[in-house]
Length: 222
Image 1 (cartoon, one colour):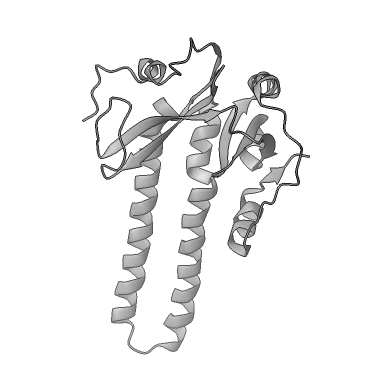
Image 2 (cartoon, rainbow, N blue to C red):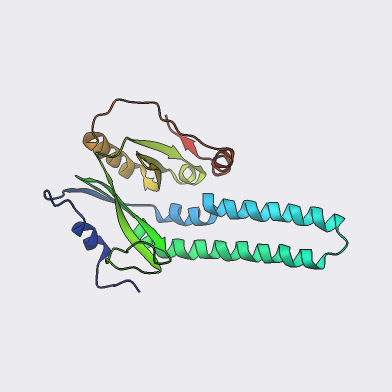
């Protein structure tokens, strides 16, 4: 179990740079409504739904052409049960992680957000390994190449803002900040990111990624 005596917000302070005092500009909280809607209707949930629909079509097609249906029905229902189990795990982990995921902290060092590891991979904020290990991650100003805005159907419906942090190791999406909070964060980012020559972003999306971007209504803002 996670050591509840170690406050995860205080644990973040212990990770601050030893070169000097870290200045906290702003502590933003994501929209709870947007977060919960994403658990039900976001990209991950849509992937489970898509697999279930594909399985349903396969079930219908095979049911019409097969004479011996017993083994086939066992396989189909087992697969649906597996998908339902995975979605429930996704949902309950998402509800548990809200306490940590909701925090976006902007400091003189960069942007702090939280991830989690499962199966005792990685260490939690209390310095120990747990089956579910929430941990802080810093997107340092010196590493960030760009911060760009995007939207999906949930953010547009609730008038919320999403953004992508472009770094050497890829792109991290941060969902559902209120508009005023996003504008403040973007202002801090522009002031603190190192000046770089603008290069055309080489963002490659394969067919599957494009398909799910279409389903979620994700759009990049220019």
